[in-house]
Image (cartoon, rainbow, N blue to C red; front, side):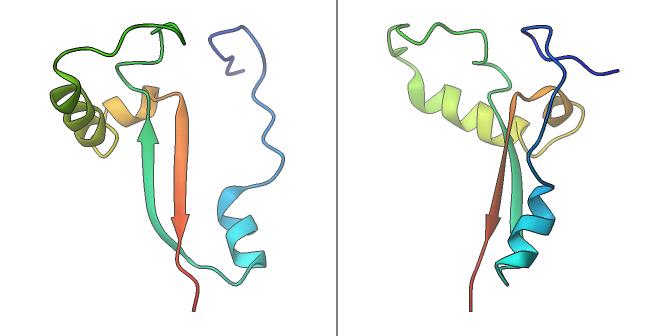
Length: 80
């Protein structure tokens, strides 16, 4: 069984795609985030090369095998 980094069993409240469908909002894009920064402390200083870090996060979030280890999922839907 899969465990989170805090050794917890993931418990999604609903399947994201189904939730969007219930809102009549079809999925438009799916991105995984926090590939490289998940272990950073909440109060960590902003790095000097923030733009490069964000670009690397964005690309890794769209690329296997990196997106499989990302901590979070952003599922974007477009209405109407």
